[in-house]
Image (cartoon, rainbow over all chains, first blue to last red; front, side, top):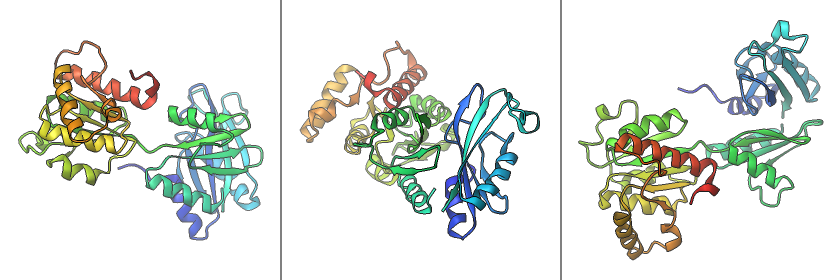
Length: 105
Length: 223
């Protein structure tokens, strides 16, 4: 069976009245683990469904999503080996990705 | 993303209708494009959809949601035994249809969706659409012909039929007599598969799958 679809999960969560953000890979360089368009749904309590990197940076995206849900303002995140944060939450594959995080609703 | 837009997007995906979400990345301004004709980004959206890939276009991000491609193989024959697992491996959702239960036997098609029914029964239930390919490979006009007519009527992105040029000429005559227009008949790929000199059912399956991928990704190259 396939994993739950993050866009359907995001809609369902939002209809329940929860604060929800959607993170989408919008650009990749090098050997990024997930292609552009890959999405992650995050709710106000840090629950998430989907993936933007196959596990490397989801934790950081979830943390940023809390801010986006609170402020309502979208944010662009960038992850990669060239990034200082890479040593903490970087992509072991050597690629770089940009992730757009927006509030749903 | 507005909840209403997300709801509309999910409804389109559930109905197997293509959709594109266009987002301006500096401020998050967004629109849902169901019909790109006349959209300022029409060319870019068409290219992204063709490739089946979401991508940036200048200050915009195009998230494309194409219905997942499917393949219906009519004929649970030797070619189908190779074609079904190979097509599954490249991402097509495969169903094999054959009313002859001796052919459409689960032990001959492990892990493949099988329907031991006539095409007239099975195909309406499957809901053919422009994101479905149909390969008719039974060599039996009673089974192949109705499947081909249904596939052409549904606008399937690929319609292929096994048979020599001579067999296909006879098939064209039968289908024309049944009221199928010449323009529709021209869409049938027969002899089936790219001309790679395929010898034997397994290699015909390879040629057929390559032809299906070309019809999906580079239809302009189809002769």
